Structure formats: C-alpha cells, structure tokens
Image (cartoon, rainbow, N blue to C red; front, side):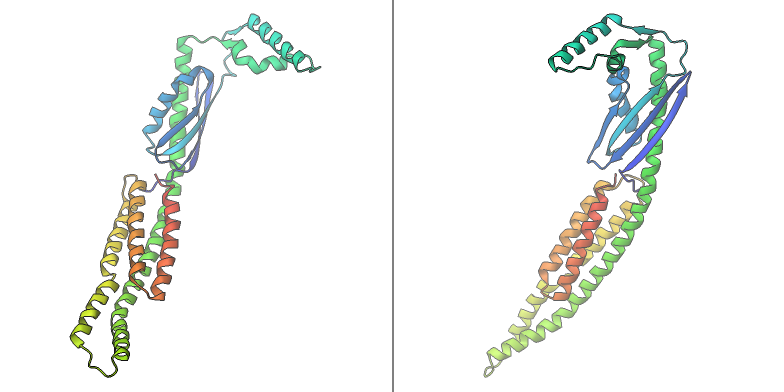
Length: 293
C-alpha cells in the first residue's frame, strides 16, 4: 500500500476539565524522526510520544505540538513564588539600567516567566491524569494524520501506475526500433565494404560474422526483458499492503540502469530521443517516490 509521508493531523481529547490539543505535520525522511513540543512538565516524555507514533508510522519526519487548556479547573491550587518574582524584577531592572531603557518593569514583563512563577498543584494523580488525556489526543492525531497520508498515497499510486504504463510503451518502441536496425546496419555495412573493395570479391562469410557481432551489440532484448520485470515488480509493490517506498526506490535505480544501457547500445537518433524521454519521466517518478513511506 502506498502511504505518503506528507500530511497534517489535528485532534483533541478531554477529561475532567482538561483539554489536550495535538497538531502534527509530517514530511519525507529516510527514517522515523519525531520532534515533540510538549507542556513543560512533560518534556521528559518525548520518548513515550515516539513509542505511540511508531505504532502507526515507520518513516517520515513528524513535528508534533501539544497544548493543554486547564481553564475549567476551578478546584486546582495555584502556588505563586513571590520571592522569585522579586528576583526577576531586580534582574530586569538591572538590564533596563545597563541598556538605558526608560520604560519601567511591569507585570506584563514578569508574566514572560509565568511558568517559573506560577505553578499549579502538580500532585502525581493530576499529572498522570493530564498525561493520559495527552496520549489519547496524540493517538487521535496520529489517526488523523495517517488518514491524510493514505488519501494522498492513493493519488500517488494512481499517478505512478499511469507513468509506468507510459514508460512500458516507450520501451516497447525502443525494442521494436532496435530489431529494425539489424537488417539496416547489415545493408549499410555491405555498402561500405563494397565501396572499399570495388574491384575485389567480398568475403560473405566474414561479412556475416561482422553482422552477427554488430547485431549482438545492437540487441537490447535482454535490457527490455529486465525492464519489464522491474516494472512488473514496481506495480506489485504499489499494490502491496506493506510500506513500499524503499523497494520502489531500488527498482527505479535498476530501471534507470537498463534505460542507460539501451541508449549506449544504439546510435539510432529515434532510440536516443526515446531514452532521453524515459530518463526525464524516471526522474519525475523518483521525485514522487521520495515522498512515499
């Protein structure tokens, strides 16, 4: 199954006057990388957040922000550290004088340090309760993000199937032109030798041997067969239930190798044009595959 690594998810969870809101964004990455911005008292829980997300995602760079709204908690006790507030005020006044700022230190300035100055009652029961609400919100957010990644993945899969089918047609044309080249090159070679030995008899046996060697050099059947095998596996990987990003990337490298060989074997301008067209399309596909989990 194709899953995009790009997406956005948002979710909320409520519990006893506490609301946890989670927003998460993801972009492509070789591995699963999680960056979480949590309320201060839960900063050490980032590894727990990663464990939750690993249940849903295997690749991608996920940025997650959690906010807690405790506005409905009317029975919680607030502890105001007045002594620390005075120290902050003295420090700000020192800075104000050193910087020659006329504006007086006000309450709004002190509120920049509200997390240090005002603490709610943080007994273990309330902290555990809040964390439980957060984990529910994270799980919901992951589901929301994954839904968007699945939808975008379906569109990517549709586009990739179409592009691979078009490339298969290009390879069929290359194979067809390649087969036409052998009799043409045989005739051309015969004419060149005839011009060189106008008054001498041409060794037909030697000529046929040279044609066989030339035909072997021009034959791209082997490359076309391998291409078709790779393209078949590519479509199967798209339809597979497992994450396919790495497999698709490997198959693209092999397909690019076969196209390169086809181009190097032929001197026909038509094949050269088709090879360039195929390489351009493979590059577009590669850009799409970079965003697949």
